[in-house]
Structures are given as C-alpha cells and as structure tokens.
Image 1 (tube, rainbow, N blue to C red):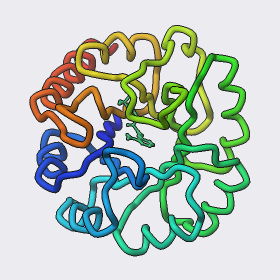
Image 2 (cartoon, rainbow, N blue to C red):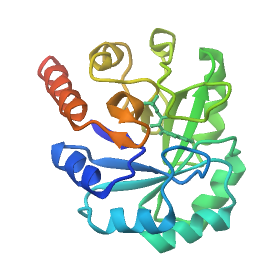
Image 3 (cartoon, rainbow, N blue to C red):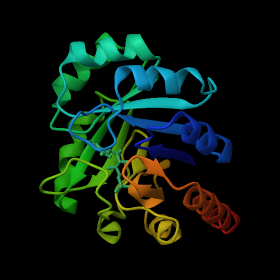
Image 4 (cartoon, rainbow, N blue to C red):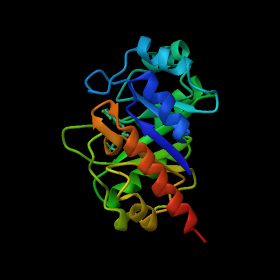
Length: 214
Ligand SMILES: O=C(O)c1ccccc1NCC(=O)[C@H](O)[C@H](O)COP(=O)(O)O
C-alpha cells in the first residue's frame, strides 16, 4: 500500500514520518495554502530524505515553466496537479518531464463526476481522488462518499484522499480498493504541523487492516 503524507513543512517531521513507514511525501507549492513551502525550504527538506521516498510537489493551475523549474531546483520526483488542469496540459507536462511521476487530483462532487477521469488515463501516471470543497483546493478534511465510489477501478494506479484519519481508514478501505492513500489534516495538530502520534496510529491501523486481508 502506498502511503502519502501531504502538506509537510518541517525537515524533522519529514524524516520522522518517513521512518514510521510513509513511502511518499507531499509538499504544497501553492502560495495561498497555510502548508506552502518555499523553493528553498523544499530543497532543504528533500536533500535529507532517503532516495526511495517519493517526493511529490502539489500545484494548482501553475504554468509549465513554474513546475519544471521547481522540479529541476529541488529534486522532486513527482508532480501532483490539484487544480483544473486539462488532459492536454497533463500530456504536455508529461512530455516535458518524462521521468517524473505525474499525479492528477480530481476533486469529486459526485460519482457521476468520475466520468471526467477517463481522459486522464492516458496522460498521467496516477490519479488521486479528493473531496470537493467550494472554497479550498485541498487539505480540507472533507471525506468522499466512499460507498458511491465502490466501482471505481481505473486502468492506472489511484490514491484515495479526502478526510482520511486513523479512525476512519479501515472503514474507507473496506469500501474501496485504491493502490494508495493520502492524508493531510487527519494527521495534523495545525495546518503544516504534523502530529507524529497520529501518524503512528495511522500505521497501527494499516497493520490491523493488512492482517485482515485474505
Ligand atoms: O493541503 C493543502 O493546503 C492544499 C492546498 C492546495 C492544493 C492542494 C492541497 N492539498 C492536497 C493534498 O494532497 C491533501 O493531502 C488532500 O487534499 C487531502 O487532504 P485532507 O482531506 O486534509 O486529508
């Protein structure tokens, strides 16, 4: 199971969360977010992380040059597009960054909305389903209607996000079969300040879930 902890802002928390078992960390490259990290902060966090950890920069409707410049400066291994980026934009970015994982986040209003996922199957590596919020792009703590998404089974890997926390994780995974999970506010004390006890609880819950798999 891929476990992505998103909205990391502190080097020591990045290291501790990795040591607890997270294989993917997300960094918010959106200035309006309370979890924003500057390019300088991002580079400093990434340089002390082990190579096997995926380092994903999260962008909202950013220009290609902004993304490619930050990738080159910092050592990001992946880019998550969390705004209204079109399939064509994703394809062009994929061509510009062929060795970088491209994740398209879809903010799901209803199960019907998932039809919008189809054009992205051939233009990104991974999908991420997040909850829709009218004012905020992400990190909202809002959950998806998991039951209505039970049939979601795209031909590329996908991550479940949106309001996951240690005490709802097992139920969410009983309804859906993503290749990975993504958490932010559910393992935080305050935006950008992760709660390491909650991260530990998350991995305990994952152990329980794994032990009960056929
Ligand atoms: O977290 C933010 O502040 C953020 C701002 C702008 C775009 C995306 C953002 N977060 C993206 C993520 O991948 C979060 O992990 C995802 O929305 C889930 O958040 P949560 O519901 O708090 O677990």
